[in-house]
Length: 255
Image (cartoon, rainbow, N blue to C red; front, side, top):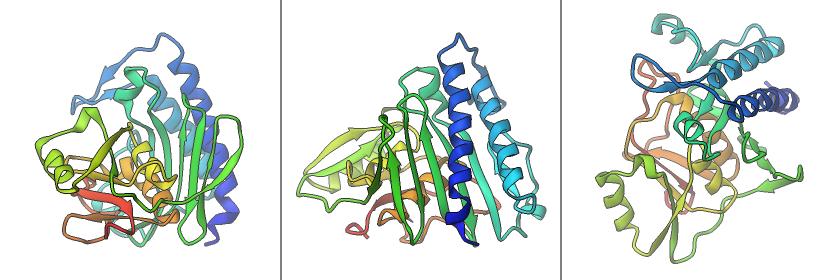
């Protein structure tokens, strides 16, 4: 499949969802909680509807798995070779805290790996996208488009992390890196910071789901980075259990 031919349409869908999300973000929205006690707002649901309908217009034959969509049994999903994986809003806590660091995420998964990703940050007015093997780009808040690439780290490693998810295991990993500085980022922007050369490594020793990471994972790989489990295996998608194992995202220097 020639992903470059549909990428502009996917970016347009993400931008449309972002516009709706930003409108709700700037309003007096209400926060509800799902059965697992995770927050959800009207923005999550509105973004899901826009993305789902938009991707269906691109192709009715490619399955869609969304955090806010209906649950699809493994007996059906295990036959998917290619599918869309979306997180209408990654970082709902960042959304509710109004710190701006939440994202809209759309990924294409093929044979267990993300091959194309689009990530938009509505409140920051930026967007990132990439196709593995073809490169990655970002659009800044002025509308200018830049090609992005991971950086070769200097002696002091720039470690991207989140205040909401710092734990003892993560701190121990970071200490082993030696000289370092922390770069704060929320949601899937942690991957994007590495992809654009503003950070060097992101260790995640805590729970994430496949839809949290897939789109930004594709962008990072397209920009020259990698994402691996602590056992040195590629982070895979389309598993029976949609939870990710612990992983490290970085430029190729680390692996």
